[in-house]
Amino acid sequence: MVNGLQLFERRQNAVSQGVGVFVPTTTKSARGARITDLDGNSLIDFGGGIGVVNAGHCPPPVVKAIQEQAEKLLHTCFHISTYEPYVALCERLINLFPHGGQAKAMLTNTGAESVENAIKIARQATKRPAIICYSDAFHGRSMMGMTLTSKINYKLNCGPFAPEVYRLDFPNVYRRAGTRSESQFAADELRNLEHFCHTHVDPESVAAIIIELVQGEGGFNVAPIPYVQGLRHFCDRHGILLIVDEVQSGFCRTGKWGAYQHYGIEPDLTTWAKSMGSGMPIGAVVGKRAIMDAATPGTIGGTYLGNPVCCAAALATIDYMQDQQLNQRAVALGQTVMDRFRSMAEWAQPIGDVRGLGAMVAMELVRDRKTKTPHPDLCERLCALCLERGLILLKAGGDKNIIRVLSPLTISETDLKEGLDIIESSMRLVLEEAHV
Ligand code: PMP
Image (cartoon, rainbow, N blue to C red; front, side, top):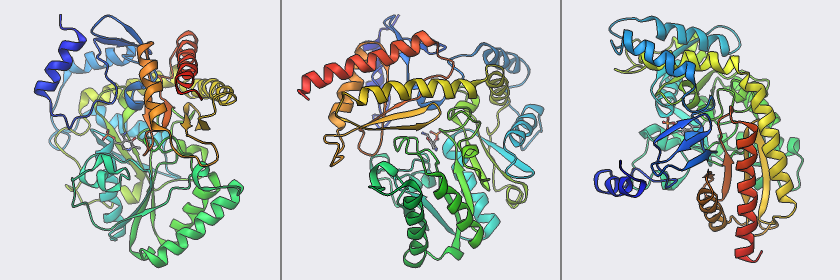
């Protein structure tokens, strides 16, 4: 049997270093919220494969559905021969996400593909070229996904990027609201948007605005409700489509099927992936029927999109999420994490902010609460110590100074408490080392 070190050596020899290592662990197998590594250690997983295993690792009914589907059919290509799991999954999705009326859906393999297709559909539906996106956004590593993504490290020397993409500042309350109330800040940000449309791009040439309502890679920045409602009105006034990227926030993570369901708005298009298939490569674009049908036949799709085994996994995942009441579970779990982080912030000065929505909870580490200067070193050390103590923890944010929790929503109370205890004791040690 290969051990962890040996596998890393083989990886270094055989795999491009461009495929980054975010956490230096290995995995032999995983169940629920626990990963067993190649050296036999059992790790608590607060990373969830970057938000993919909301329903836990290898949920038994999903594994069974995959096995049964694999026996029947692996592939035809949906363009060549129509099979039921694809249609059944689209039916489920448009039921969960009616988009204010009757929706339609298409399936993809990944989050980036969902974004890519949503943009193509929006352009075809509006016959307009421009797209507006946000600072700190992450929308994937395809060419359009990368263009829309904010963080430079994800796209170093990969340009030229796609044209007609304009970037607005994200309404980041912690970083930018100052002493303003949330509603005042939202009103000011909406005024900035109007101004942006005089100085940067004519709104009549904008096909869509794409936003993560809770930014994932950006560090769980939650867009204020009045801002998003104002954004919806702005889009309506100018015939711009509102695309909500739910790739990380979707499928029970925030305590609802989609984060947009907290906001009292209906998007025109939504993009999905990650936890939808419990780890199988599947995503979707869902949207208003007329918009989805504006795509000319043949312009969206692909060989593998909506593979039958992946569709079966997604259908079983949705059933399992419903059976296990994962939305309710996410609310309770998020509250537990939020309470613990807030109580840590009482003694840990570098915790500048604790925020989130449902079970999407983060803490932002800063050198000084007044200047809010990011503290990536502390964040790095904290994650390393947690890993030594058996907890996988992910960083986020353009400055890598944010800790985010994306544990499976099925995690047991014992594992959750143990994970939070590890974060707390590691924080004490890090602060002692740093003499804070
Ligand atoms: N959008 C968002 C909001 C994401 O968080 C991600 C992945 N982190 C993507 C798109 C891209 O998804 P994928 O890696 O499956 O292409």
